[in-house]
Image 1 (spheres, one colour):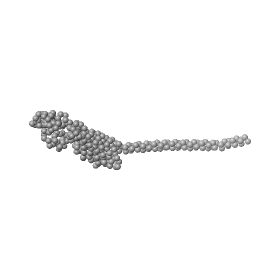
Image 2 (cartoon, rainbow, N blue to C red):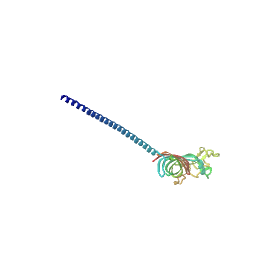
Image 3 (cartoon, rainbow, N blue to C red):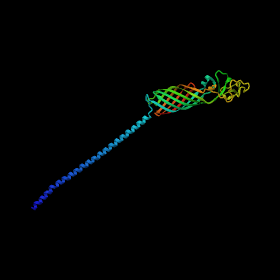
Image 4 (tube, rainbow, N blue to C red):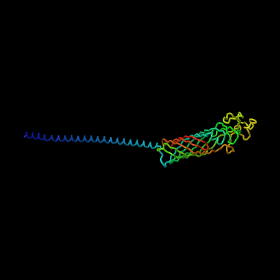
Length: 304
């Protein structure tokens, strides 16, 4: 009986061990599956992070490209049809009145260079450019000999000036050629305007140092008359006018020959424009003004 009980106990233990092994195997397998799941979750997380990083880098690249494109667009010089463009800047011009032009109307005189400068505003659309400007001009002249074309040699006077002019002008220009990106352009047109005249125009009767051999080309060889009879008996100093001493020619308004307003008519005017970026342009001008002679000019302006 005791032997039978012992055998039963041994058999029970034998049957019990496989179940424990199976439980342990099942537990091990579950742990392995959980480990695989964890590893897969880790891989998925890493893949997700990598994708997020790639997406972020892509967004950054697109943002940088967008900023670059916006920057390039804001600096682009190309002008579009039917769009209006505005600039404000400064101009400088040198007006040259050659002596041969004076010789058409008078004898004597000298080549005059008059410099002007001031602000200008530019409006441009569809190839038409309009440039209103205000300019200050200095027409000061050193003394020179001068007389009317129909007057005799006794009428020569010494003339000098410290006159200044204030111009209000309008240039109207048309584009005749424009580079594809609008960086370079040639223009042709003209200008009109008026100028107020300020300052003095001095005139003085003169007589030559050598009356027998007067030199009409060298004003330093002449002396100012101090009156109608100085020098006495001389034909150069007379009482036809009062141009003695510091005589200042009155303006038209006071019966004199000095203008108080001066017309400006320039035709033709040729211009070359350089516009490297949207916000800046420079222009070179040259032409002929009926009232003031040939001119050369430069301007620089900022785009509004």
